Amino acid sequence: MSHSLSTWGYAVPLAQRASLAPLFSGISHTYILDGVLEGLIGEARAAGEPDLPSGYAAFADVFYIGGNADCLEARDLVSRIPFFKALFLAPNSSWLALIGEAWGEHLVEIERYTFPRPTFDVVRLRRLVSSLPEGFRLAPIDMPLAQRIISAQEVPILEDHLRQFGSVAAFMQHGFGFCVLERDEIVALISTYAVSRTGVEIQISTHPDYRRRGLATVLGATFILHCLERGLDPHWDAANEASCRLAEKLGYAGYTPYPVWLLVDEE
Image (cartoon, rainbow, N blue to C red; front, top):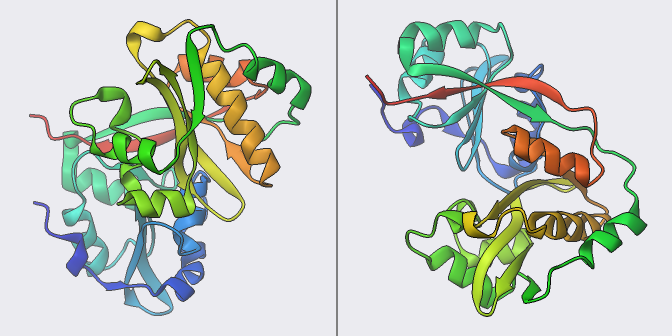
């Protein structure tokens, strides 16, 4: 059913993307949406009547949809949504009903957990950074490491990092991150999944053989301190209980669950 998104509607110029913000009212906030609307990352397209448009904001595997769902352009957009995109929609919106009607059992609801920004205990975070076990090395993601990460083939812990920026140069311009290495092997890493002018979304991965050694804690504390030094909000948005527990260890508290929808290509 899917057709190319690149021919739907029109690309909203970078300087005008902020005007789309009202379309996404009521949808759970992330800095992904902010970054797209600020023109730093992703793409935004719109269609329909100027005073009542439909539109989307997209980056990597995240897809925000909003605006007028009661028009031909909306139905056309729904028919083009790729599989395995995480759909951010306003709960109980007309969009949800429209997508459910079009895609039926292919539409699956999952739950994520968003944490508010806490008042971080900087002294404690620095202490956590210093707890890196012997035999490991902490390094910022520089150009050579970024190239290794993006070029790696069939290395699961690296697959969700940096590539959404499209190139090493784009990541180095907008993003940042840190690796834990054993000798010369990357065994854990944290990086900006998405960026905006005021905050970032976090991606963190540890090789299964190196879990429960405190590496993710060291990385998380290092990343948060780096964000605070740059005046950025490190937003923690978790997909599972393990991620929630790590967030709480780093000082986050009081998560709020919210729904996200996926289109899955399964019979």
